Image (cartoon, rainbow, N blue to C red):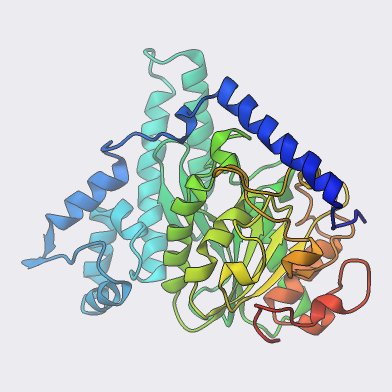
Length: 403
């Protein structure tokens, strides 16, 4: 196991390395990577606009951005037939609408995905596109066909650009405990699931976690969400070195956990840049979020657990072969993400990642990292194994919730 504390000399060298990285990034990519187009009309924007100007049986529809409770009340006043009509006429809006019934969002997203599939099917044969463009259209069409399988429960879907998606494993309405997997860089519709390296992709991570939780505590009604519903950085460029994508993602993550049905306890599993998203979101998370577990973290935009301003327990792990340990865990002029969550001074509960291999192996079945994740998710805190043995991680550090 790699030592988690750094000497003053090593910190100086890491500071110099951080500055070197800044200059290299500026020289090779400039600041253009953090600029974003404004005012572009997306399919989801157009769907929400159409919803605003529509009605049902002579009644206007509520503002799609209204509080979730108001949206939920609106749908409660509708008949089953009326709900389905709205899901079919406004699938992209209903499928992404917080407060809409979960089962209706699944149905609406199935319609939205099918329409997106038809678009890509046409693009596959569009002679105006390059060979590469038609190939990518085929890949997207195949992905959409996979997402439409009868057993899939798609909670959110947006086909714009690289795409966003969230999928539920288990019964979200009846769950006592909900786990949310928050992935890192290069997450999009095409990387949401993989045939090779299955457990390095969000859906595979969530699937492995759900199975492990069911095996560990079959009496606990649990659900897991593979949450790729934010625009993640592409590669290890400027976006990955700043909090811009994390700030946008944190708003969406908070919206998700605040509007989940019922009163289930929620645990977040934040991998790589996903831990930056969770760190930025931490201070605004509702009390139902009892645990934040990070793996392979570049930092959480805080210098300590106390700096996260959360009542949730904060857990951290890192495999000894994970390359993330070699990056500078600091923040300079907005670049970098702060202290190392597995360092002693940070104050997280550092747990064992034995068996995990490298940066993407934390959800691999048979690893202690996955077993620890599952224990946290079903509330078996006394069974969590600490990094280096002992029981330190099972004691409550300053700034975390009590067990």
